[in-house]
Length: 325
Ligand SMILES: [Zn+2]
Image (cartoon, rainbow, N blue to C red):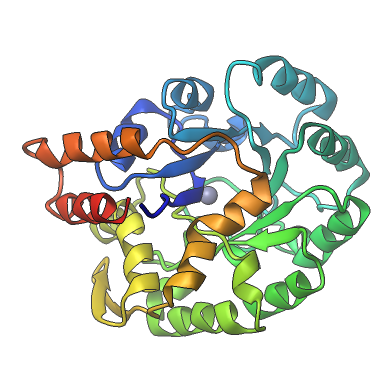
């Protein structure tokens, strides 16, 4: 049986998003909690409770740069007995700051002690959330400095420092404890969304930039749920379909639609996909708990039989999961 994927970047922070995610795909997922300043008035963030009640989920609590950091670490330490915490999330760009700022050193020390990964938002922001827009602060070169000071800690740059993709991959090459994903790009309304072909080509190039680049790339869908004014229908369609989109991108060379836009997959060979889907993640965060494939198969079968699913393509994904377990 092929082991399941590990989705290293989701925002399954409440029950509604949880059931929506698992009716579309399956496997293990890391949940990035939002800081209050981003989620307030936008969506309910109940990440701790959501992860606690679902054995396929693991938590990355956020570190809020707008409030004092030591009490946040104490609070995480107290609560991590009851919930599987595998890392922390820092929302650079949205919250002004740099990865090598002194105030973050206790966070890295904490992560070293508890063997946790540090994930940053890097590069451009979603158009739907309030932001300090400190694009320069989230530059990969500052993360590299933190990674050099803490060689025992793993650092993940979500979104490949969008749009500084190639520079990001170049920096990763010299830092084995740095990883990246390219989830969450291509939304209608973003630069990548308006030039899908360019974005796909760029990511395809990034995977093969150096002979071993793909070993530092993680699978992530950035699954979340915000509404957006304007191009709402296309946008919603797009983000709900991210798991399927990423799979089509990695596993086929056919033409597909994402939102209303056509794209072609890059058809990676299986050994590379296995690294991106799972093996890199296990190296990045360590084996968090034994993978229970029997449980996963049961869940996928249950969902496959469920009538009136939100969208027909869920069946296709679930059948795929069962076939690949
Ligand atoms: Zn995200």
